Length: 232
Image 1 (cartoon, rainbow, N blue to C red):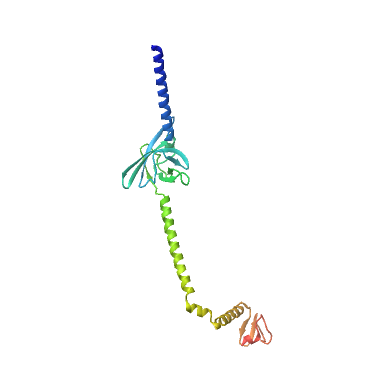
Image 2: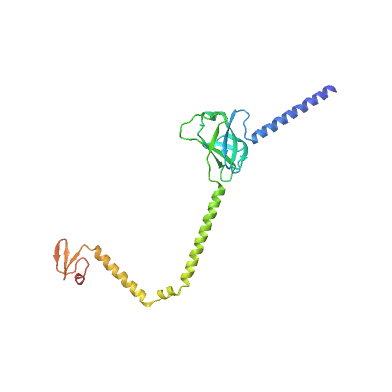
């Protein structure tokens, strides 16, 4: 009887340990942590993290290289973000790299993007603080779009009022309905067409004679499409 009780206790302890390990594994998996790889921590200072939380991914050139460990609000203008990077990144990331907050996809979770700099600098070490780079947020884009829509609305309203004033203008109606307007306009267009034809013609008028390629010709014979009576 005593031996059976001991066996039950051992079985219960085994189940509890296994359940604890399973909970720990699920917790580490939910936080995107790796049990078998070493990591080191660095910090980044932001003014606004735009919804970044612990557990979000950290990327370099689109590759996940770590996670966000902690997001701490220091004051109204400073948020300290602690990130854990894979140990292999100590040979890749340098101290002058910049950090920015982006989005995983169009409407996905927030991520921290580490942007390498082209300037030479020492390799990063545990405990270093990287500079942040402000990025255009979705909220700012929506606010800008709202202002643009309002400006378009104002312009359309002004255009609508202008068209209504033109339609209700009696002076413009009288001018358009004038009998001599079309005749005068046609005459003006005809005069412009004649002058353009004279400018395009290779002939030059000198007194009553046409000068064509340096030779004078009597105006009685039409030349280059210019009637003789146009030479006077």
